[in-house]
Image 1 (cartoon, rainbow, N blue to C red):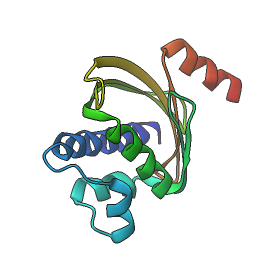
Image 2 (image 1 turned 90 degrees about the vertical axis):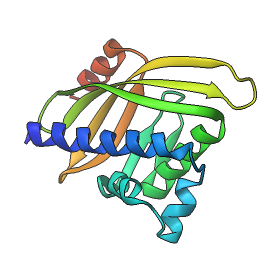
Image 3 (image 1 turned 60 degrees about the vertical axis):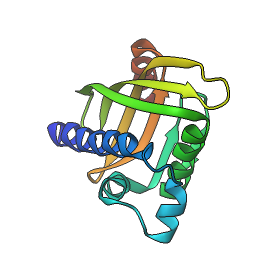
Image 4 (image 1 turned 90 degrees about the horizontal axis):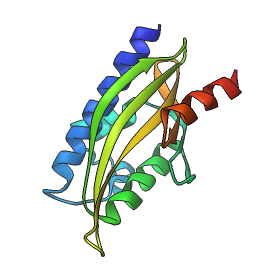
Length: 151
């Protein structure tokens, strides 16, 4: 089961990266596209890998629940940026239902034009082959400590 979770997570992030790369050619609202049923193939693939009860806690501590809530969370990040990209560095099996995802996120602020990059460590929990929870951290140690606290 754990290799399957790694594969599902890799596929999810591959679709996310492709969708973000295309986003800047035609900025749009993922939430609006989701609500209208007008998602492209990668957008649909992203949401198809999310459990209906998905919960995403981003590195700022903001919690987004449900597929629509997560789409709105992505919209809020993209609206604050002139450019935003993600590069997948690692997906590591942690146990039967969790993986650690390491990405580098790069952003250019919409108003300030300031650029920055940050490495994020996300503990993804899967249920029934779907991503049900994602918790972002700024360090591997924090992410792994959170996993230990849950056990």
